[in-house]
Image (cartoon, rainbow, N blue to C red; front, side):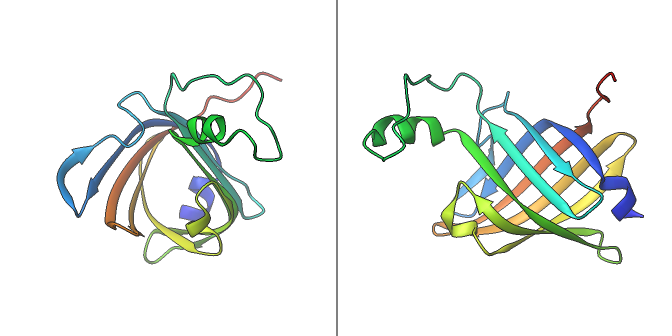
Length: 148
């Protein structure tokens, strides 16, 4: 069952996208993007993906006075978490977004078509953004267990 197969921690292998307003496959966070997605047995998920080599910043001011540094840190990073459910018949995962770097995703349900090939999980998504539709393919490998 999909619900059993997906539980665990997965490391990003590749992230590609096709945008309706411009043809061709792109790499939204670079060809060497890195990330982790986790699905827990009690129904929560968390996804974090980033572009390697983002600029460092000296100290992010929590009162928002350093917007340039905050924008630089956020550019090249995608993160969201929340509860998830499984539709076994459609082989889809439904991510109920409770926290997100992208405010437009808050309170939405992101649907991911899931397929497995050994220890590899592929998630296919069709998401709507203000500038159009994005078809994304994210390939993950099961993370090796941490030594006890």
